[in-house]
Length: 247
Image (cartoon, rainbow, N blue to C red; front, side, top):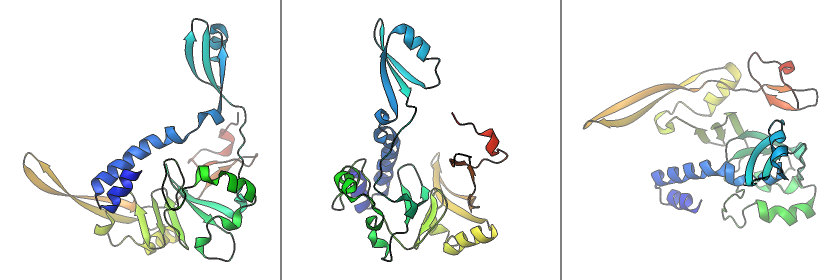
């Protein structure tokens, strides 16, 4: 994290991108605490064989001739939160980032989470394990990168906060036609906006200029499947709610 931040401060885009890829590749495994979502049992070889045929089986490790460490899914999990989630909405999320819309009080966007904390004692006790302190980033910690009054998100890696546009795969400096209005027209009228990326490529000592045209903004997905138990699942075309099964 510190290498990427230093590279961004030095405007070393290559090193910053490399550090970002390394962080993203390791974030999922490092941040996921499997102990909270699975159980580990010590079983004999016979019971381990039976456990392999169960739905909740994940992994087994041989400790000796007749002893195995077997990892299985938990039947249920519990998550404590100090936030009033009725006043919080996830606008968009990615591998290691998300954008939240918070309806706290009448203050401006700098209020953060102050107005939606329903359990101050729990929050003050545990926030140091979760949030970065004093504006300093920390590994696996949560850090607020930007704040604003509005956010328009068509999909992950395709959103705009205030006047800053994020659109993966498109060189924005070369495509000024992509702006806030193009996001609005896509939502209201389904307008597709194309983009042309121009890059240089060298092969066998010959430098060439390549232009690639692609659909940059095509549409937004706002549908979801809601099951009888109020679970929300992603919408897949031609797949109805009765095709989903709950175990």
